[in-house]
Length: 313
Image (cartoon, rainbow, N blue to C red):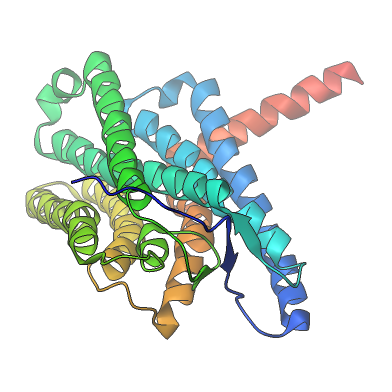
């Protein structure tokens, strides 16, 4: 049954990362460098993959999607967080809060599905190398990309609709530095137990199920790698280790946040900072420094830029 929404709250007050303004200024300097690095690193990956035809493979197609999502995901939260670090009162309008939640879950859920697809891609490449080009054809990759984006969109619409289905007429202090569904729903002027269960069912179960599928996939891959030659096994293990690192960092946060009651914990802000700032920064580092193909493509791109610059001068 849809509740009549008698919301009177026009804005929410976001929590500070620290009570000290001097520490906030220090954090601002740190996070603006991190945000700039996220933008430069991930955009550079996308440009390199588009530019280098040797990287026009399923693995790098999905890696470019991951970098694009990381740019969007961090941009949903970090600009507002940076601005709030410079102000004493940290408020966000009701409409902006809803928009932030919508795009946060759109990109986060899409990334969950993307990581699952990337694991399947590695499984097909390592366990079925002779049929890989058929299994992961161009059309299949495009279809999988469309499915993951539509799934993320439906997930985000569902959670946003749950949030808008209850009235907000009293407390307006969100106990984090950005708006998220469990924390905002906790401020509703009605019993939200059923909605909290639905959040666990939608977000928590998706994250946990995806994590289990991913772990099983990589176990099968590792078993298969025992039969490979040393060089091929080393390269495959390096790629899988990079994927597993990203999966653990990203899905660990989702499981921690959405599989527990909507009660604030001291670790929530630390985990949230890691989720919104550190993970998108680590992705380009993990996928470039551990990847010879990406390093070679970046060097080639830089070499051509230097050559073109020399011709102009």
